Image 1 (cartoon, one colour):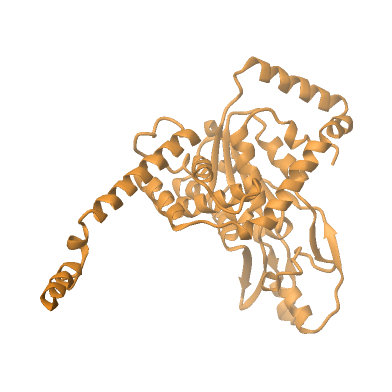
Image 2 (image 1 turned 180 degrees about the vertical axis):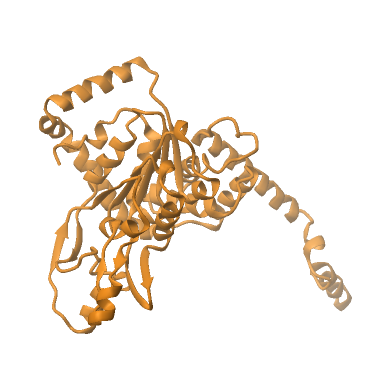
Length: 376
């Protein structure tokens, strides 16, 4: 794809790039919302990441890109073919990248069932929509804040379920809808409703780079890309391949990455201390931390993984508290995790120094000790 600007050539915007890469490692995180002023490489980064993603394996005759190794997620057509014993071949396809227009309707998104053909001929005919096209790929929505709220709800529901189910007049059709959801918007043109905002797993607020040298670098790279995009991509090909391989390896490692009860307590305590509404953020932080550990080739998550994940999960969920007027950095979050863990350890120590009598039942250690003395 010579006309796509290389992801690794994007200057700065590290949070945005990290959020996109982690969603590529684990699409089940739930997508990312990128909010920022015009001309800050929002759409460039989304398209560039899609070009990095490895090819996917699917059936040659499947319209929905079903994964041969995951029969539980197959579309209705693939399940029927398997039931009828149809022999099928496998092929590799590029990771899909679908750009959803702001004017998209519900039928365009979920697809349509031809009821007339079903009634007249007794045949089920389903016309795929955007969700089918984006399966196992990336669904990009520019100016997501201008999209109809009902359509946004449909997209977020499908992203959460991983399936698209269409039912009309007693006829149903289902197909997998697992994709990386990326939405971009300029807050100056209006915001999303809080209910929809919370449904995006991660959010990044970005602004134009102020450092002079980096701004010069942006101009130089963009001019070089415009003059000869093929040569420019060739120059960055090694780094692009390295990142693509790292994402592929992280996907394989992800199921083996572990977390402890202490990690869960740290995440829960962090959200509670910042007065974050609901529980979605806790699950998002855990999934993102696991993806970050896998991306770095580790088999267990650390407090740094949790902090970096929280840095991406909180910006659109914090409504009050000490950090309301300022962004939270990963360093501040790590410090807060340390404070919470320190308080937890202190409480555990105090409970251990004579707290047994208060927490034990009436037939606890004290009574048992007295009975032992009587026997002696």
